[in-house]
Image 1 (cartoon, rainbow, N blue to C red):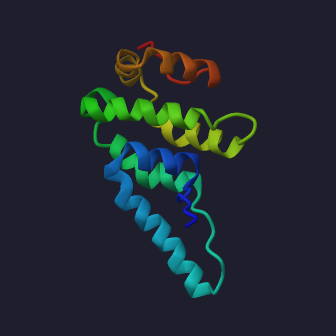
Image 2: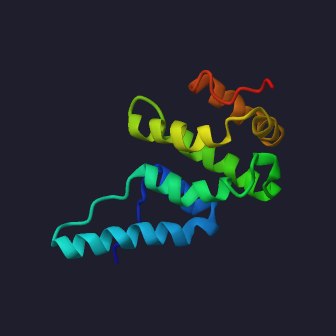
Length: 140
């Protein structure tokens, strides 16, 4: 029997993989699109990357004013999420790169959060600095 995994795109897939607490929101996004497609008698469209970022990942990050206020396991999983998405960012997928920068990186772009992230995954912070100059500034 042929089997195929669902593909939510780079941001949705990484959110599903690393944030079980976001799965209900992801389900609502997908089901909402399916409902709209049924109502309009059309084929469903993929959910936009920014929807997964705003409704799936965003609420997890807003639980703390800075990343250091979040559960350490959530911070660790956030770093893994970022690494997974970064594997899909670049000139081949400008939309993923833009969404990641605007909705994910920007959400934690304060010196205290970056210090916390560096303590968990310093190579990730260096990678973000290299790919997105001017992002995740560490100075107060």
